[in-house]
Length: 82
Image (cartoon, rainbow, N blue to C red):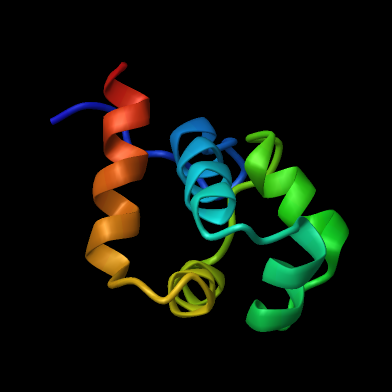
């Protein structure tokens, strides 16, 4: 098993997956932030891979994007492996 991401390590795959899904749904960062009860700046930080969100935040984002958490995780993993 490889190294485990620490809470402070950026999650670039997750950020790329969030951006891809948001754009597929025609949402702005502001719209996604509103749906997930987050600040738009936080969405920008997540998409750029500068921040590593808490589990609850990831769940809220998946719900806001109207997809299962497992699909968000799968997409993030694909980006991480690329």
